Structures are given as structure tokens and as C-alpha cells.
Amino acid sequence: MLVGAAFLFDLRLLGFSRNLPLTGLSRHLLPWSQRGLILIIPSGLLLFITNAQALGTDPVFWTKIALIAVAALNVFVFHRLVYSTFKRRGASGDLPGMARLCACVSIVVWIAVVACGRLLAY
Image 1 (tube, rainbow, N blue to C red):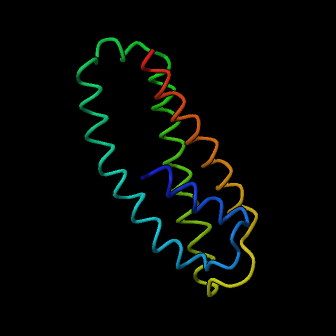
Image 2: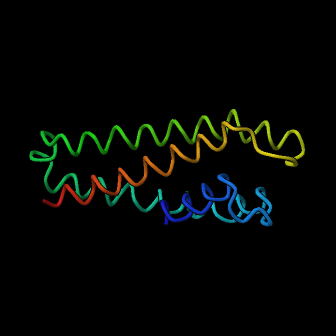
Image 3: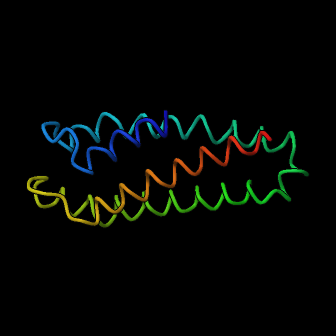
């Protein structure tokens, strides 16, 4: 839920489906990302607890944690600096280039987070 909704929003930021208003799409998709995060945090903690000793020394685990921190920072930068300015201007016109950069960072980071999660199983 988290990554899927974020991907759809990022694709819109990159220029796909320009006929969909960005503010309406954010009101629809971003709550789904938030709900996904609320489900992922407790489940991730429980999974960590079951194998904390091995995961604590696994570089893939720490890479995943670092990537999640980068994703969180990217979301903060986008919503506080880029998107809030866009909405204050009336949410019309073209998005700034920084929005596209944030979308690219988001897509790459979430793909890497999912890949790290899969690698942890091995």
C-alpha cells in the first residue's frame, strides 16, 4: 500500500496522467501511503524482534534502514518545501523541477528498499 500509492503519485509528478489534478490525486493516494506505513512499522518491528541478533549485524538490513531514512527525508523536503509552495501558488501551472527530482529519488529509493527486503530473506 505504501509503495504502490507513492509510485502512482511519483509517476504523476514525473508528468504521466497530466489530466489528473495533482491536489486531488494527493488527497486520494497519500492517505493510503500513510495507512500502509502504519501497518508496516509494527510488522517490521515484530520481524526484527524475531531475528534481532542476526539482523543487527547484517549490512543489507542497515542499508534498508538507511534507505528508509532517505525516503523519509525526501518526503519531508517534498511536502515542506516543494509541494507547499506549489499549493500556495494556487496549485496551477507546471511543477518545479525539484518535484521531478523528488519523484525520481522516491522511485529509486523505494525500489532499493524492496530489493533489500527481499535480500534479507536469503
